[in-house]
Image 1: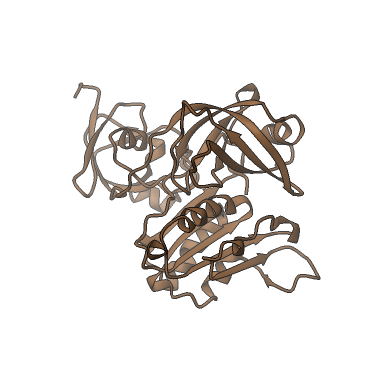
Image 2: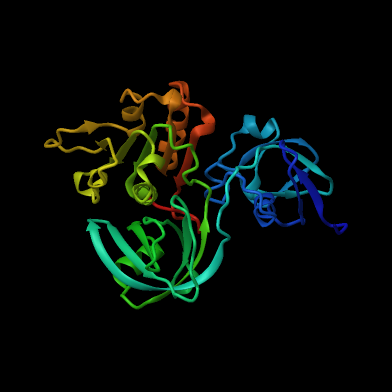
Amino acid sequence: MSGAEQRVTLASGAAFDVVPGQSILDAALQAGIVLEHSCRSGRCGSCEGQVLAGGTAPLGGEPALDAARHSAGWVLTCMRTVDGQPVRLAIEPVPLHLPPAKLVPSKIASLERVAPDVLRVRLRLPPQQPLHWRAGQYVDVAGPSGIRRSYSIANRPRAEPLIELHVRAVPGGSFSAYWFGQARPGDLLRLHGPLGSAVLREPQDRPLVLLATGTGIAPVKAMLEEIAARDERERPPTIHVFWGNRRRSDFYWDPAMLPLVQQFTPVLSGVDHGWTGRRGWVQHAAVESGVPLADAAVHACGSARMVDDARRMLVAAGLDPRRFHADAFLPSSSNHGKPS
């Protein structure tokens, strides 16, 4: 270990070295130690942990941390580096094997408008540079003029080297102007991934609850496809999907097409006088559904507000907080935004 590096030790005893200027999260992943993470921009809070000893230095803002937690020594590992002395963190590593992220070229294979402001994009990968991922992960897509955005992968890995993305239009968005006005089949784009730790990880004997808002259904779709490909004995006993949208036309995919889904509840938050289904918010629908949350595992994918509310409400209703996993979609004003 060089003099510039410092050791970070986790609650489990696992340890790794961090170079000043390198995020604690990146150093852990480089050492093969998976910490919970999603946005990597300090805005979702997935990678938070408490500093028990030593010092850390900020690499950027940590808007997901409130003042009380910050004062109590909590930090976001994606936005913190070491500060001249060994560090101990009250964080448990996640017992997962995640494929390493890498840069790969891709070519647009098809573009399909599936909702008024949503495109289904299929990207073809070069067979000689395969990309391995797990359902629930995402990629960063680099487009024209160096613009970079994050998009969840909407399909499970298959023999055919294709990645499916669900892209929502953002008014005034630079990348949206490309996707919805300029993109054509055959265009070349660069991908960096896979990224994120919100993958399926629970034992198969637990009920599975999947919550999504908007294009947060993309990673849910990938998870359902992965489960459908398993032997029946390796599937959860029940699967409940709650998907929230503002408009009826936003429900561009039907999870009930996969027979393994026991309950699909579309939830409408906008005004539609002809809508006869559930209204309101998906987190309320999940809590009020009667699903045995004490035994369940939950994945929430979509708006940061939904994710935060769902975590609080479901844990209060009996869910073990260690079995709540999330991929928070953030405004696309940052490179890592995933508009939901």
